[in-house]
Amino acid sequence: MKKIIFIFTGIVLYAKSYLVVIENPVPEGIPVITSLKDFSFSIFSYEELNQLKDKINYQIIDEYSPDNIYYLAKQRFADKKPEGALILFKKNGEYILKGAPYNLDTKSFFVKKLSSEKRLKKNPEKTKNGLNFINPTIQEIVSKVENDSVLNFVITLQNFVTRNSYTQGCTDAANWAKNYMENHGLDSVYLHSYQSNYAPNVVGIKWGQTDSCYIITAHLDATIGNPWWPEDTAPGADDNGSGSSAVLEAVRVMEGYNFHYTVKYILFTGEEQGLVGSGAWCNQHSSDPILGDINLDMIGYVNFYPESLDLVSDNPSEWLMDSFVVYTQNYIPQLKTRTMVNPNFWYSDHSSFWDIGKSAILGIEDVGVPNPYYHSKGDTVGAGFNSIDFCSDVIRASVATLSGLARPLVSIKEKPVLVERKILYKKGMIYFSEPENGFVYRVTGEKIFEFKKCRIIDLKPFKKGIYFIKLKNKSCRVLLF
Image (cartoon, rainbow, N blue to C red):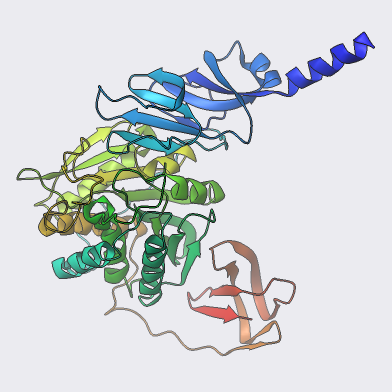
């Protein structure tokens, strides 16, 4: 009997998992949840730690359970402490907290909810796309950015009164943004619901000649400092109506142009609660061929002139930041940039892309966040958002970089007229007037299958919904059945 008890106890110990802090650099082949400059975080079983004990320097900070919730927090001010939170780890103003930090004032702390998904670190794919010459198509796209259009976006978003992710106001803003994207030439637009009590993310897709994609992102939600509960007021003009306006303006000015690479436009929610929305989307799309993300967060406040745009990358994303600088110099020379490689600057949605091994950069008015109206009711047009000229120039630079990296094929004026082909849908079957090559996608962008020289496609085995057929000649058809 004693032997049975002893064996049973050993099995329980053996099956336990632990949240650990690992000193960087992490050896190749060891998966992590997220990485900062000096250390990384991961979850390992007792057996895995035994196998790794001679390969890494680590510290166990908690016994892991799927029911546990962890947050990474960074203090903005040295005299502020995370009151009421269970602190598991502290170093250089960075904290790991256990449980939802409901008492944490986000005016004083940046927060990020940690995923339980761990992945191998890998070097993102790098591309070079015509940095050494001026492309007239990119010039044409950039010239379409208008101050009045940008300002209208910011005012419209502010007028939802609150965009706290737990509120109807944020859901209404997401639906409005979805409708806007649907009316501006994108091939697919959908709401990405990731948690029932959060407003959804908004995702728009413009297909290219390849599934490999570039993305422009911003967070749609806002807060006045207590995002853990619904807030009746959260105008968020600068944070982050300004970044959201960049995504929507990019949709507008890039309408009608075709690109070699697929372009995705995403507005995330749940950012103020710890990058929850971007974390959920990135975890679901970690295997997608994402080449780079341009994330814009707070680009509408100037504390002194001339203002420069701060750009932040981690080490593997430095090429993307350098590309942004060159496109800015070529197409918006009046906008000055200040660059920094800092994997510890994880305070916005670009960090979720870093966690899945993708290149991403952040564009922000100032990394020190000097805006006195930050996370307050005063973040409105004329106060927290005080420079439409600076905001619009940042958007021009972002559009130039996005368009340049995605590689425009032809301008609207040069756009060839496609021969209309007849496609018939009947009772779950697709009939082409002549043999076709192409792909079938779900509305979310997931490729279902490829077909070659087919005149008939049977979609009856699939669930009811919206699907896209992408033909080799780049024409698309939306199918609802």
